[in-house]
Length: 289
Image 1 (cartoon, rainbow, N blue to C red):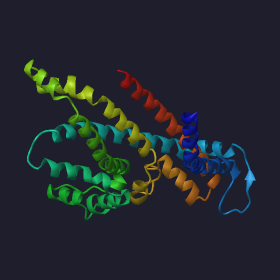
Image 2: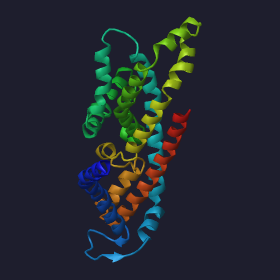
Image 3: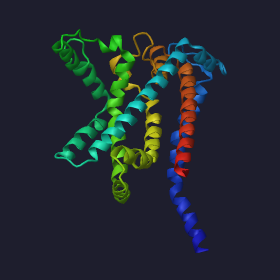
Image 4: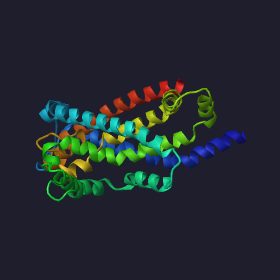
């Protein structure tokens, strides 16, 4: 009896938080679903019910497929860069050398910089074709400076986003390396295993779970990258750097079509959930092994 009363009291105490959380999520979702079924344009005061027409309009939009391809390209490229270089840098930082703490702090620092600030730094101080650091280096070697955001816009976005998320991968992987059993390394060393064999058969299998977690978390956040594109390229030239997130913003706040933007947002949520479920299954298999 006492246990049941304790459980009832616990449920009663957490009920307000649960109700508030559900209201915080369900009300905006319900409003988005409702808006997606309306001909809702901010320049037109009339609201008419159109059913699934907004979904059909968004999916048939020529910019949809290109934005989906740009999103997949950006997410895949950033994941490849952060995982490969994250493993390599984490292995280097796991070694003992003078000034290791300072180097670790400097490598992790970019993760704590606001995306707007980092995008402005890259745009005006590093990649500017006239006064940027990279332009100066090109001139030092007698080369013509590159207008990165005009000639290589998607590559520029990928480099900026990868620079921001690389410290996150380094932090997670370095923490995993520090929890590795040193006796296994010593035993392998005594058996005559070289550095490459120890890395291949001991270190990399140990990093399998942290890597899957890094990939899952980064994928969820990379699908919503917006600020870096807005500050640097504005989705251009043309639609070369227009992702799903930026296309939805353009539909809602540049074309004032809230109905189509709401439909696009729901489509993006469905695609993100599919990607998340796929990655969760991969993680589950790794955890089982």
